[in-house]
Image (cartoon, rainbow, N blue to C red; front, side, top):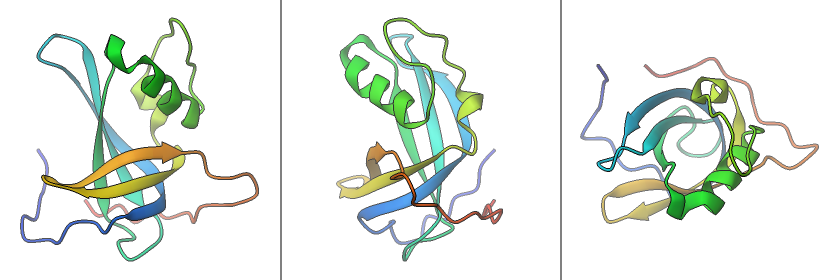
Length: 125
């Protein structure tokens, strides 16, 4: 079960520090693993809002998947065991873009060394 407010405005485009607050594992139509990641934005005009990102682990996305796992300080490379529950509370800079179907996370990057992300326990659900 989840809660959604369909009248909310989209998250504004930009790059924000964020924390993984939840994950949902599913399968793609072809049976490949896919994970929906809920990012809690920690700063900016949409601080304390959640934006989801779908990550499909398919052969065509190997480079992007390795980058994603590397940013979350997870094992990555030729063949690894992936446990998305280990992603909870991981921090990253997420770049949000306004797409035709709403706000989308289009990129993640490590938080630069020496920069800290604010800590919050205010999860809005």
